[in-house]
Image (tube, one colour):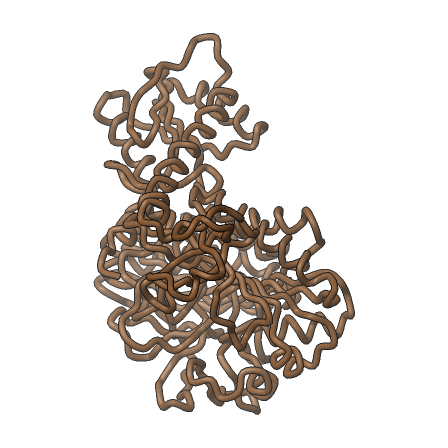
Length: 413
Length: 144
């Protein structure tokens, strides 16, 4: 990862600090914390369409034995004795075993969504939100299901994850890797792409393997779903213009900035009140009554990832990607106009990232239909099969095949 | 977050504090000077500090201070004398003089008193300013 411009954009938007606290430990600021919380809420809302999850953050110091019983002596975690506490602890590297223990103890059917961060060792260089020591936010969901229901439950979780990532303005394709994993009896990877078109994994879903199920002492199947702040990082890579970060409305801490002057403050406040009732996140910025002051305020709000800015002085609305000004029609209600403009903003963002996706995967034939006979000799090799299955003519022989993701490398993240 | 945590956030926001992520552990050797009071040595031989009650901590770097982050706080997991809590407040503010910093400390202690089990604070000189550090164990059940 050499292009760190997404880090600069996130720092300029005051979502993270310009420098990390230590290697692989980025510091999220208020606005970034709000965005991460919005991402979590989007996911929870999707999950609530098929279940009633318990959302929880576990303690950071965990007993070593239950962890090692499941994961063995993994070298990627930190263990230590802690002054004032009697035993040895592991600094939370995973939520799986505690989620599973809680699910088994409650014998409930409600899944658990664990939030917070994970701490893992980091060899080599890091890249903020891609490869960190303190991985935050680390969202890990676990769901205990009967084996007969595992496939349909996994499908529900896949849709929830895909819809969450789509809300971040990113295209996805979910694939089941061709090479089996010791971790999962079934494994799905939700893949998006970098602006270069290179595929990157944004979420993982597993039905745990019998080996791990036994280690967790579970009779039923366990679904394990995980994603991190990498979604925000990839969104920041795709969604920028000359003014800086342009987040999709679902993740923007402020959706509509209102630039006003002291003698027009009452108009701004009336607008903000109406926006609140229509659940649009607005913010007023009061400036001196001069064109340059208004422009500076507008630029600042855009730099801080605000999709739309309006001015009470000029009655214009300023869009992003591209930046352009449209007059607010005298008869229009601002919140209705804002809702329409936010939807259009999201479509523009999604269209741009979909173009990268198609250029990187479809146009280069890395995502294409292949039949069972041609798959073993395909070059690049088949990395995984699209889920849900997509049937079409094999790009090599024309026989019936399935859509596959091909990759030069055996593994990618 | 539960009610007390939300009330703490409001209290800090009203006084111009910006929230930052509560990082639970930091390596002792880092370029930014960040750290907490409780130190541990991991089994791999590395020295780390754990987010903990006490005013021997640093949340802000000099560069961040120069960029205008003069008041910030974090709220989240931490070690207390009784074990682990999910709601430990650590805040740091840089004021122009000792009197302003002391006044802010007094004001925060009063505002946080009803929301916290214990509040400790100190003022010292740092980078040519008066630095207030405040730690409070917020009353919350652990699970949330």
